[in-house]
Amino acid sequence: MVTAFQNTQVLLLSFVLLAACLAKLAVRHPAPAHDHVHGVPLPGWLPQATRLDSRPFAVAVALVEGGLGIALLVTSQFSVRLVTALAFAVATWTVSELRVRRPDAGCGCFGGLSAKQVDRRTVARALLFTLAAVAALGAPRAGFAWLHDAHATVGLALLAVEVALFSLISPEVATLWEKRAAWRIRREDEPCDRRHSPLAETMRTLRASAAWSAHEDTVVSAVPLDVWREGCWRFLAYRAVSDGRPAELIFAVSTAARGRRVRVAMVPAEEPALR
Image (cartoon, rainbow, N blue to C red; front, side, top):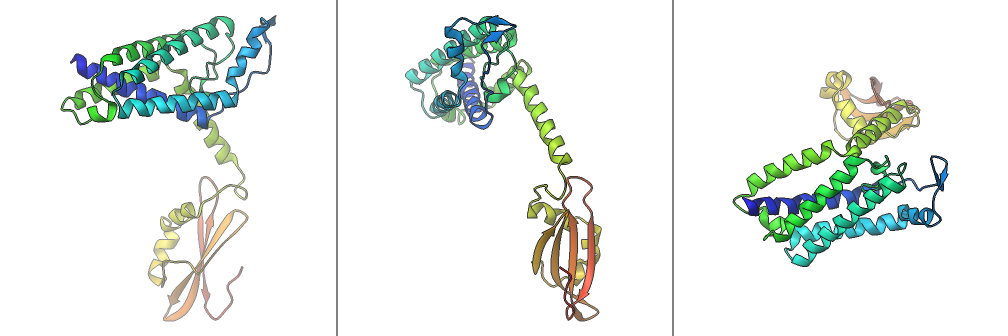
């Protein structure tokens, strides 16, 4: 049971390191733009120290974290485990210092998702990760190798519980949902004539519409003859047969974010289709 717990910590740490790496690369941390906290000037050395929030430093840290996360999965070398434990110990010290010296600054642990001020939860989380890294020092298996172990199922259940618990004390989860909600609002409020509307989205809307169901049997080929977009509509022209005579079916599919409508017109083949 002890061995299973140790191996589980290896997977947990790998998951956290890879998640932190991807978050730092994908979500930029806002750079500090002030030398005061609550109106009180900071010591001369501290503003310079906040340059650690710069983009080059964040990318460098992300690459190190990603490298450690992958190494934990592929090797059981003690040196890798030791470096991981030291890295989390340094992270714990760093967030503790930030909480005292920069109460208005985020830790940047997960890039721009960690922009909220450091609180006790952030320090406690870093400390728990450090303890997990210490426990993983004696793990006999690499992450990927242990997944083939007979006891891996129990370990994966424990891993799921630990990830859920850490998610509860992580402010980044709430920030991620806020960003997702804000992105959806911006996307839905974007004018339909300027909204990015992939052709695949249009095809899904068309195939699910009543207009397509009503005329599907008249369509000769599922590949449209022509596709073009005008304003809030994308038009698709299909070769069709109506009453035994060749024709063109022209579908107009709305490019709006919600409530997309589909209109259809049948045009005799010998007559030019409206463009």
